[in-house]
Image (tube, rainbow, N blue to C red; front, top):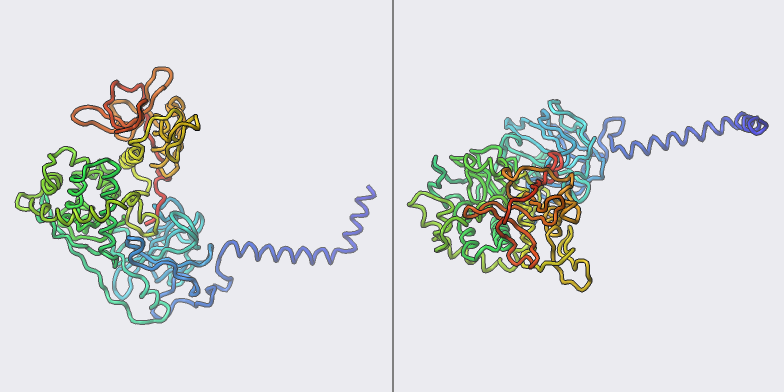
Length: 546
């Protein structure tokens, strides 16, 4: 009791000092919270002294002292469809011009994490801007909102595919969500800074026609489309390397790989082309836009009408991995007499155009000779850049995921069988330190699934545990599709493999057998006891940037 009385007396005697200390602490707390929030000053002025929108109604999208870390144009062999500005995390993002917000999502946007898209009318032209990489809670305006130039609409974040806090800023002719064309934003934001004259429109497209039956009526007329300033030869080398990379991983013969290069040269000039005839295709990473009288897209000009459903929609068709595997899968069913014949049989053009593939055979062979020794790993190249047009590293759709699982499993072909060998990172020495590097059956499936999902799905180590994992979804044997896992053993699973589809009427599987993985694909000798599928949540599947 006496202690409480003494404490009360102390507080009464020193109450003014205590109140002053509490006020100071409160002020520091408010200042700290404000710095963490990254909001504008209370006056509404722009931090860094950049000022409001200029007299033309344009505003610099971040504070003027923010460094530009990556410009529009070629980057790492890819077309970077925007520019990156790097103020601190939480710094304000401003609307470039007056407009209407047509998209606002702070999480789950493919590659961006969070983004805002604003539709404008600038100089009498419909244009749109994109602001990307916001963290959850970082968007301050909702879809449908009307914004003014210079309005604080978001905070700089580091979400999606991003190596550090920054704003990925894009400028489009037309509506970004309805097939707009990306243009270099640099002269436009300089105009916002200085009030200089409007940049000239330098966009332009070329393309090819196809007939109603899906045949190329004039293959070879596609040059580069609109490659948005990207270095064309660099893009060709990247796409050629990716074609070679997949071919090598699939153990395709040289003649087939060279035929794929010839087909790519004829169909798209080795560019992953979107199409004006398929507006949605322009929403996905691409190397340019072709006019397209018919619904053909991509490296090999696949028709949407015939291939979209099995590819997982337009997004799947625009994935280089899907396109390249489609070519090789189709090539497996045609004769292998010559480069030109294989390519023509796969692409199936009008008869008068079949010679075009043979005409490019020598050029295709030169690409193969020059790049085949360094192509490994190139399929994932470019996807690490914001705005890059390679999309294998995007977590793919169900069919695409199955193909990716098979592609990863093929990396184990030629390895010995090792009891306990293999994990999520690759082959291991197994249970004995004296064992060579290799895989057992469940080690191979654990590796393939983990790598194919970008680490999102890490299966247990044994076949028994994998067969009962809640990370997988059971399907019937009749519903099995490539990439599904097949389990064998009634009551206790003693073996697991990966279903790879049918060939010549026989069901096939990738597996590590007791004598190793010399080829890796074998016939399914008996119906499996259980079939399980890797399924990613929709939100998890949208994680990479453009």
